[in-house]
Length: 182
Figure 1: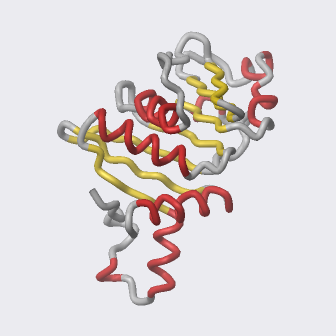
Figure 2 (figure 1 turned 90 degrees about the vertical axis):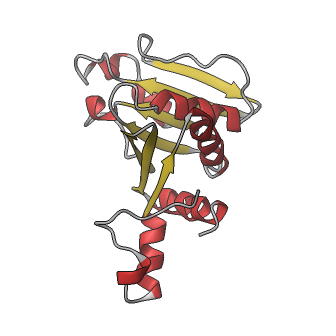
Figure 3 (figure 1 turned 90 degrees about the horizontal axis):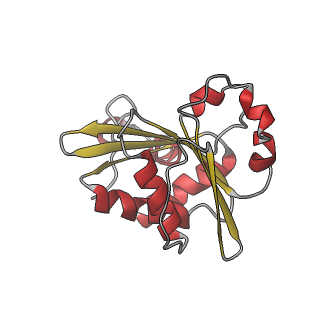
């Protein structure tokens, strides 16, 4: 399914210049994900645009599909073992060939300052791929995300919106649009 732009961002019909449309296409990506298999496939595509390093914040209510998306990213990198949710451990580290990935879940975090005790900044400086669920609970201690990914349940599927926050994130979205035929 082709990605779409949300109504408040504009559409091809009401954007006057190609330049404005191109700017929108590189700062935001939206797609409806109908089921778990599609979320896993999208995660694999997302992994392919990370270029070895990325910080991706995952937003959504409980059960929205954040961990499923993370599992898809790991599968896209070639990881085939069980993917555990880091809800109780805060972080699950993975190493696939020469690629490191750290999957964080800050849902149970009581105080953002607790992240200093686990050395969270060290993880964010490694050049690895970082997937962080509930990043708002670590506000002020986490570095800026390259991409912010919002997952919202709708009907039986999910609406997925990804926004670039850095120049690297902009390149990732450009590559994501290319892979989806935009």
